Amino acid sequence: MTDFKTKLLSTLAAFATLAAVSFTAQAETLRLLTWGGYAPEKVIKMFKAETGIDVEVTKSNNEEMISKLRATRGSGFDLAQPSQDRISSAQLEFDIYKPIDLSKINSSQIIPSMLKATKTNTTVDGEIYGVPHVWGTSGLVVDTRKAAMVKDYLDLCGADVAGKASYRLKRPTLIAFAFSMGLDPFAAYADKAKYQGIINKVTDKLISCKGNIKAYWSGGDGLMNLIRSGEVTAAMAWDTGGWKLNKDLPDVTFVAPKSGALGWTDTFVLPRKTKAEDAAYQWINFVMQPKIAAMITDAAGNFTASEGADAFVSADLKKRFQASFQPADIDNIKWYPTVPAGLEDIEGKALDKIQAASSN
Image: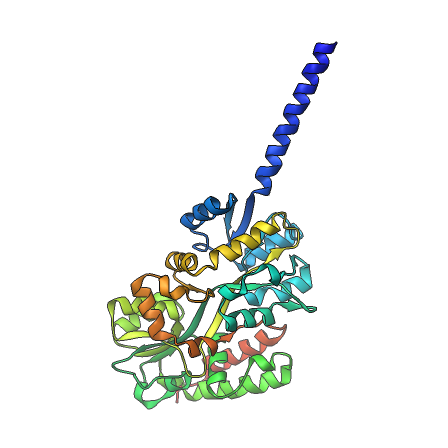
C-alpha cells in the first residue's frame, strides 16, 4: 500500500510538473494576428533570443482580423494589427478590443504626428485602442523631367499634362481633390449635409478635368505600364508604386502633394481576451526600435512609425523615401479616419456621375 501511495504521489507530481511546463510554454508564446511581412522570421528569432518569448504568426487582412476576433469575442490572439480606420467602429459594434496602456509603450520611439493621429482615430469613450506601426500613402507619381510642374492633385487638371494624367475613379481621389481645393472632407465626416456639399464641388471639378485624363487606372500594373510607355506623365498613386518605377526610370518618383498625401496606418491593438498582454507590449517596444523597424520595412516594402528608422533601411529605399518625404511632408499627411455610415453612398453616386459625364 505504501509503495502504491508512493507511486501515486510520484505520478501526480510528474503530471503537475508537466502542467506547469505546459502553462509556462503557453505564457511564453505571443499569438500575433498580422499582415504578411510585418513579422519577419529574423525579427522573431531576435525577439526570442532577447525575451525568451515565442511568436506564433497568423497572416490576415482587415476583414479577416475583425471576423476572427468577432467570432471569438476577442479571444484566440494576443496582439492584432488592423488599420486605424477599422478600430473604433469595430469596437463600438463588437467589443473585441481592450484599451492600450500607453504607460507601457515607449512613445519616444514613435513619430509624434503619427502617434497623435492614431490616438485620435482610435479613441472610443475616452480610451485609446491603437498605436501606429506600418504606414503608407497615396499621392503623386510624376515624371519629373516631363511634368515637374505637378505638385498637387489639382495640377493633374493643368494644361501641361493634358491627355497624360491619370487617377483612379475611387473615393481616395474624391478625398484628395477636396484637400487640394482647400476643403477638409474629414472634418465634415460628422455632418452629412456639409460632406455632400464638399463632394458636389469635387464632382464638378473632376468632370471639368475629365478631358485631361488619359485613363482611369484600376490596377497598379496597368498604371505603371502607362507611365513606362510615356502615355502618362503624372498620376495619383501609391508611394511604393512610384519607388518601384524609380528603380528603372530615374526621372519618375513619388511626390508628396502640397495639400498632403493621404495616409493609411496599420496599428497594434490588444484583443479583448488577450492572454499574453505583457508579451504584446514587449513585442511592440521591440519592433519599434529603429534598427528592428528598418528590417520590417525591408521585408514589407512600407515604412513604419518608428522615429529615425528610415536611416537604417536599405540604401536604395532610404534614398527614395527621403527624396519624397521631408519631415514637414510626414507631418502634413492626412490620415484616414473611420468612415461614418452613409458617406460611401454619397461618394458612390458622385463617382457614377463623373463616370457618366462627357469629356470637355
